Amino acid sequence: MGVVFDDRNQNEVFDPDDHLMPGVTVILTDRAGMRSLGSTSTGADGHFRFDSLPPADYRVTLETPPGFERATDDSLVLAVTERRLSAEVKFGVMRRERRSLARVVDR
Image (cartoon, rainbow, N blue to C red; front, side, top):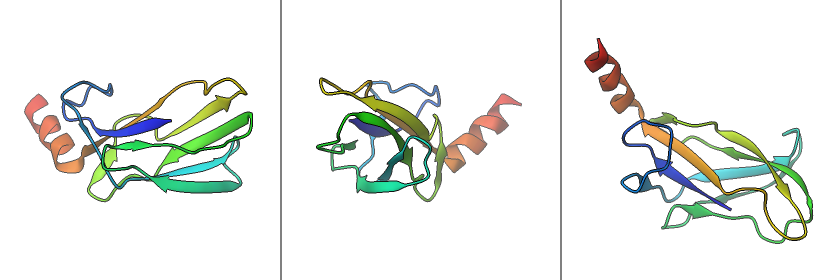
């Protein structure tokens, strides 16, 4: 269903040199985000999935790990049909100190 990656170059896109992040919590809710339907953690390979979902629209939300901030949207709506998922989710995060350093260098 998706991955969580450390957006090392801060371009908000998953690139081959970005590291996938294990152990990050991802939460599944109804489309409105009002009713929790479960949560999972990324595996050692940085991937996560929710199995056996009936067709519907769902919201998938990243729980940003300590010491990081989001580099991409942290909550997305996905459509699950009988045939497939509407898209693969790619959540990007970056270390807070890396973002601060980038701001200083830009000045």
